[in-house]
Image (cartoon, rainbow over all chains, first blue to last red):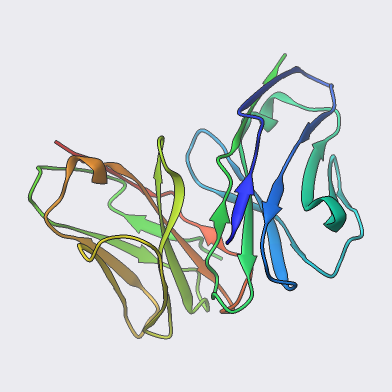
Length: 115
Length: 113
């Protein structure tokens, strides 16, 4: 069964702090994809990253970085030097090959960055 | 390039009525998926259409249905509305069909009274 767990319901940090959002997933498939989306107060989900199960290299994009560890079924997301504009709900999601584009989402983590 | 558009943005309906929501994908995208977002259940997959065919369906009752037109625009319909159908309905489009990145629209906020 597919499942995504984001144990952190809400995180508050002060601007310029680094913050890591945790994501743990469950799947019986060997081929799958993991995603992160950001949902600002406007409500629209913004795509951040897509990673396949065979690529365990960490990825960095500006202040964002992702750590994929298959051994612990985790795909964590770190924001370096957080800014107020990073305040949003962040969702981790799983897609198994053969199920089209169906995404199974975690419950989301609310990130509040205070100035 | 224009993003995913959804209409209407807000809707208020009465229990027992039916509603139709519309989604226009990004130009060139042939996959359209629908999701329901509620505070209690989070984001849940409703169904996906690709080239006018339903490819995948989530665990929702038959009151929830959809279709896709030849220009890739999609509609979803909810019949016999219940209070629990109040939610943000999000549409997403994708260039390809399988586990590809999806781009979401702003959503339709449906309130059932």
